[in-house]
Image (cartoon, rainbow, N blue to C red; front, side):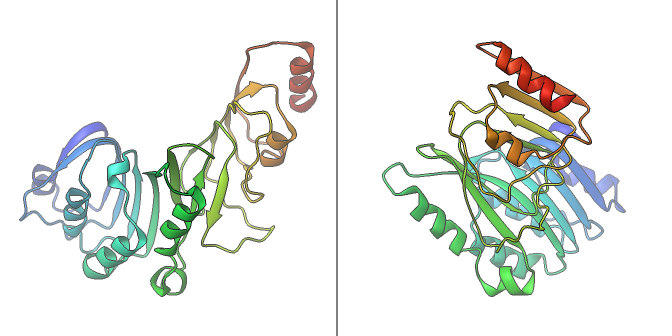
Length: 253
């Protein structure tokens, strides 16, 4: 399903054996307080405009046998810290085995960015997260930007965007052999800053669709070491010159 309001009462009534739902761009969720789906084990959903976290929690509480949950939040109003996640999973989703999420959150311009990120990550450093489930998260943010992105590792979504230099902090200790971004097939790389950088562990090995803006710096080649799976390329240069053409030919031929 794509771009819809979900009326769960009707869905559950007509599909008593439904075990899996995959929904992209859900605008809102409507559910009668009595509706329960005991058969549901897998839920993958992208939420756009649900403004209250409680409606999402109420939705999940109707799926007591859920084992796999993947959710992408496009609204800062939906941000859920680690303590709230833990409470909800312990109380309502005791069968959950796998959790993948990506959330957008807002930063306070009056406070130090890194201090805010540390406080956010601290809520995901309990024994529940690090020992019982071994679920790790990472927060990416750009200096002097209002928003940050918080997601589980490995990164579980198809698209990743670079528009500026990324700072990262995580609850996971990294090593050089980890492949944390293999799910990414679409990469958008259009930074507006020349000296862009990112954490060393952000690398993409399975890119199929690439959108880039020239000129390209050494940073790009460090995060995309090869193009074995590349199917399509969208290249843009506002100031076209022969050097841009040379970069393109040298790397993609």
